[in-house]
Image (cartoon, rainbow, N blue to C red; front, side, top):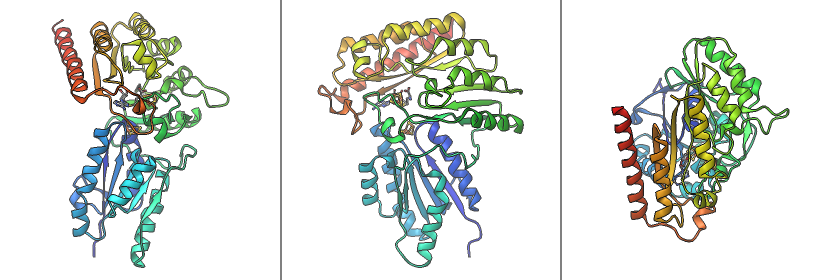
Length: 385
Ligand code: SAH
Ligand code: SF4
Ligand code: F3S
């Protein structure tokens, strides 16, 4: 009889998912499973999925499909799928139908109960009953009960909020992650005190879809600037970083705190998405090109050496060549330290997916390459300086 059992987690998507996989890892270890990097050796395989673009979803489908063969070889294998894709009812239904060998399908709000789903599958198999566990979309409180098994070296992720209220018209996140909920300041501070006291971590990265709106839902309200100040007041040798900032909520006060506090890394990820005001309005970003450039100027005034990075989407519905040039010129003007550029990917259920004037893939492809080539050229020039 087997005496040692292994788990394997495949994580797609953003840092939030990476961090949530650390929670799943801690539950797996508590159940007595040991980590394996090799999928073939695993008795429990978990896919933590991402729904942000079609490409991300296709990768997940491909990966899950490939497991059918393994399930035939190892009848005891348990396969679980969680994360943002399962939060979409249609995608969850499709997966449940298409991949009958998947044992557990759960949403992002159900992770803390992971052990109970695994136990239920095992029990059902023992008594030779149907063992599928499905538990989806159960928007609830932020779980504070399960610890994290930290896996990112000297960096410790700390979630400060979950969800998003912004409803950018292209984005699926508000639909799969629910409304913004901030963690209590005291819980965040005590988690960070523990991280610092352990002496194992040099960097603490605060996570949220929109960290600048931290605390607006708490009573009494706490601002992100206030949270940053209190974190920096914790004694110890560590640096603080955070992502992601939304330009509409990045206040002067936050910029001033970043400038003033030695513990905060001078490194801001500030997604612009577009450099054209008509497209920004259609995207529901709620800032203008001028406002965005004003924020960059303020950052550079106070911190001339601050690293600034950004995200862009090209080929948003109805984007003309001239409007794309506005984005191109913004990138040229700001000279970001690095950018991500994405081809717009229609997400079912979002406002933009239903808009007329969807742009052809060839056009999106050309625009994304133009932007990335520009970025390469800028980096080369800046490097020479
Ligand atoms: N909360 C973060 C973004 C998270 S998603 C923020 O507001 O900045 C990360 C990036 O994916 C976004 O910045 C955007 O550039 C890109 N993205 C989101 N939805 C997309 C879509 N439908 N098509 C292409 N790119 C998208
Ligand atoms: Fe998506 Fe916009 Fe929310 Fe970011 S702020 S997660 S892009 S809806
Ligand atoms: Fe993807 Fe969900 Fe993050 S959709 S980008 S894993 S919040």
